[in-house]
Amino acid sequence: MPASRADKGRRSIAWLAIAAVATIPVVAAGLSPLQRGRELLWVIGGMAGVVALSLLFVQPLLTATAPVLLPAARGLRWHRWGGIAIVAAVALHIGALYAYSPEDVMDALLLVAPTPFSLYGVISLWCLVLTAILAATRRHLRFSHRNWRIAHSVLAVAIVSAGAVHAVLIEGAMEDISKLAICIAALAATTVGALEINVLGPLRRRRNLLRA
Image 1 (cartoon, helix red, strand yellow):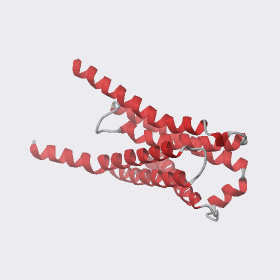
Image 2 (tube, helix red, strand yellow):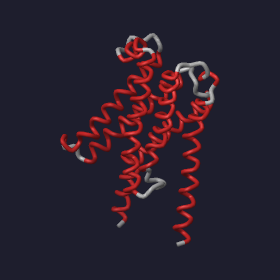
Image 3 (cartoon, one colour):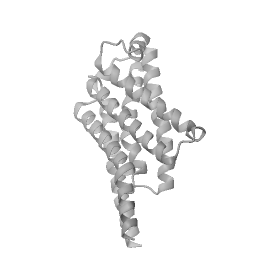
Image 4 (cartoon, rainbow, N blue to C red):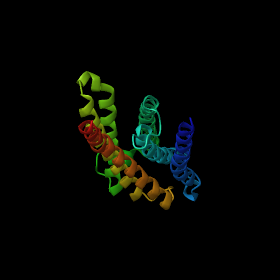
């Protein structure tokens, strides 16, 4: 029982730290002076993008196995809802910005925008769309668990990498230090999670089998 309480205490502290890292960039962007005088659609679109970036940091931690932060079944359930929330936030980000400035968004989607950050945003977007399609159809495609795990991990790293570059290159409402911190945190969590699921975890299990 004491060990169980200690584990719960450590998990609670870990989730408080995760919540702080995820929330600070959103609050800082919301309080930015650049938000003043802007049209509501611009503010909604920008803030939806910030929320999506913070969710990308939290998403791999929901199914973390080293250390375990949630029971497996609950973590997987929250991970699925997290994926839906990310898709919704990105859709709101693009939809609100399209309503604010259709020409700029269409130029970005057609890869003719003069701003370099647009390319990385589109790369992240299409990797996210592909992930959502595969997640919805993988049973019909008869993806094995291993193949799905690898594809999902590769796409997740691509989404976060391109999304982080997209965010860093934009000079907008996000505060510079918290923006860089959430980008690094999201990249680290996603990359370590992908390595743990596909490389480190299987190696540990194989080593344990050889010892047994």
